[in-house]
Image (cartoon, rainbow, N blue to C red; front, top):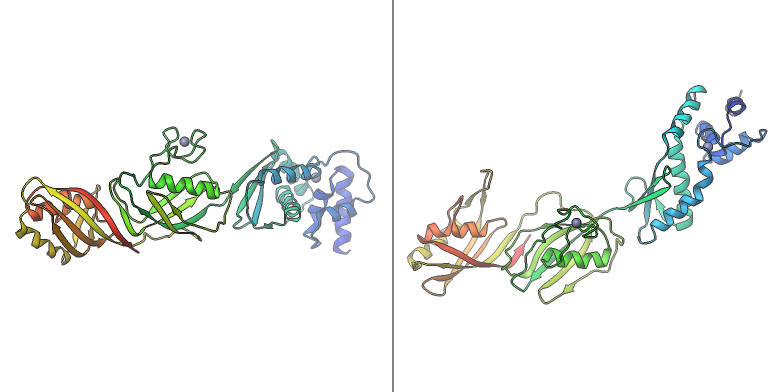
Length: 380
Ligand SMILES: [Zn+2]
Ligand SMILES: [Zn+2]
């Protein structure tokens, strides 16, 4: 008996007892016969049978594919993308009946109803929209719930890199989270996780949401600054990941506001895995109640030879190198310090002291305050 004849014999046996749709019947044997269309095979195997009832396994789920195709198209209407995948949640009873038939007729190596229905939907959707199926790394993923006939869409995040130049004092670098959801995203904040847009983070986020849509924007900054700091030169590099973007491409991109300039903004493949090493050229404005002694100021040049030892809150020790030191005395109580230093040196602590060796107050033998500090250049 040929393989096909064996299949006909099992199929006839099944059909005597159970009514199955073309898709479900074909699915039971298509792999075995190396055929790609379950529907055609099922139709062929059923040609001598007359049916009036619903499919024992799926209750004619496959008849409804056009309806689900339509809700997929509707839910994707605000997204631009090239690739997609389809996932499904189906009633457990369907899976149970499918398992029952397989075990009763000892059928093995068969696609599940779920993978068949997602395959069929994927094929139809691709034909209709000219988008490509990609199950490994899709730009847009549909999850169809056959239980409540709904469709969820998740769009893959995009990552951008760029630099910002801050030319106005008084703007925080980071935005406070939405009070209602603590940054997770809720209806109040339109799922952005922030509800105000008055910081560097907020201004950039707002700009990106306008360009790409999306829910939250997660930033990685190459270093940090104070509200009162300026960031000059080529600006501070940053990376940002936009979750659930509607658009994935844009001819970027620069933004030029009074307070903030965005430059070199571009879409990149992924977030940097390792922490990015960088150096900063800084100007620190320092003042002291006591008179600053020039004899001590001269000693600051020695900072270049020895690393600064910093202890973090947990007591962990790390070192930061200073590459160059210059200063300019403005008055008996004020001077500017120009540093080129390894990124991550805690600036205020370095001036005012606190779990850091050496610190400027100590070296100058007087209590110093860091009034403000500006970044002239940040190099990665
Ligand atoms: Zn069926
Ligand atoms: Zn919120």
